[in-house]
Amino acid sequence: MEKTNKIKKFTVLGILFLLPITVYLFFASGVNNFGKLPILTEAVSDLENFTSLDSSSVQLENHITVLGFFGNDVESKKANAFNLAHKIYKKYYQFKDFQFVIVIDENQREEAIQLKEKLKEIEDPKNWKFVYANEADVKEVFYSLKSNYTLDDNMSSPYVFIIDHDNNLRGRDEDEDTDILYGFDARNYSEINNKMDDDIKVIIAEYRLALKKYNSNREI
Image (cartoon, rainbow, N blue to C red; front, side):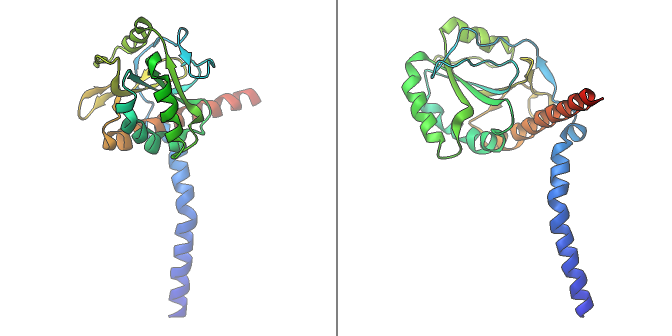
């Protein structure tokens, strides 16, 4: 009996030791498990004519960006922001060059500042960037995504988009529900928690692998 108990004890300890390693390896090798996240649109317009809340420079190039459009409707998009903060930002904000960029109307600056304060209750919002520009520039960026979505009368959209380091829109070209999935409905907690989380995980794993290969080549 004592021998059986010892075997059970070591079995449990072995599982507890190996499980975190297995999970880490699964995550780190995400590209091999899932393949690369498809490019749906190349050369998404950058943010040269946009101004951030603190007047710092914000750009899409050389970042992994979650891009959203709250327009003149920040107050009604709070629930969307909290969904994203809980399920996406909180997990990945410490990854190098990862950012959230939210396009707002200039008259929504105070509302955006207040929202950023509320986001502190979830995680440090240092990589939440709120930017604004004139209507023509906002439309240029939005429609350069070439998605099947439109901006509403408040120049806003419930959908958020994944933009890679090279200003390409990433998404799903064979989604089981919509065929092509250009963006993620931030109102839909399940979609953010499942589809978007999976896709962010894939693109980060992709960039980790690319960085590892780059560093290996430099050492040769």
